[in-house]
Image (cartoon, rainbow, N blue to C red; front, side, top):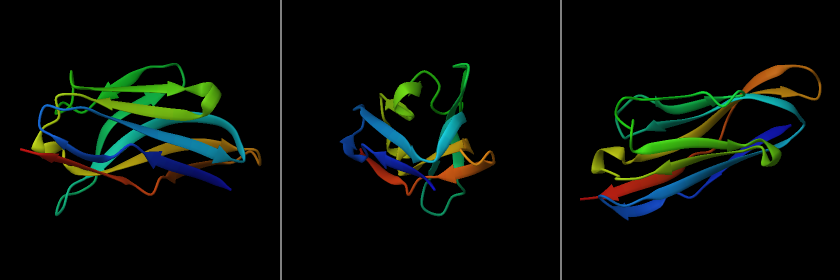
Length: 120
């Protein structure tokens, strides 16, 4: 069994910063890629940023230059540093990962989500 647990969400004023963390635990053999998605009320879930095993990253245009994704392979943890936050960044943020389990299979996992609210 593998779990992704997010933390770090909260309420912040526009222009402020938050740092999200997502820790993977359980029967993990290797982690392929890690990413952050978000879903605002009434909208579809969208990708925010992804980082793959070689450290390559990609970002949604809406967060480019403001958000930074990073990973700590030793801790099986991915981070999302969010700066210059805007009210339109308000959403539930989800961690996502493709993980090869110790059983040899690759599955996609999601965290439970963490709320980020940016006030104007």
